[in-house]
Length: 93
Ligand code: SF4
Image (tube, rainbow, N blue to C red):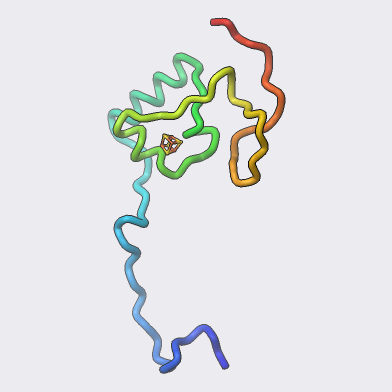
């Protein structure tokens, strides 16, 4: 039995993904402004370090989640892309 075909053995037309499943590519004025601010202030965010798929939507609306004290997390959650390790020296600035 071939499990790739439906039971009636008739090929089905490709269906479009629902709108709620689609993620827009990051961009826009607010996104760019936030990204520039992160770079100019040398800030680190969960959004970028974890490669969060919601970054386009969140940053476009001016929302971000910060990592404090650098870009390294002391946890090592297997599902997360943030660098794991001991944080570096504190930058008091
Ligand atoms: S604020 Fe938005 S982009 Fe940032 S980590 Fe949370 S869900 Fe992801």
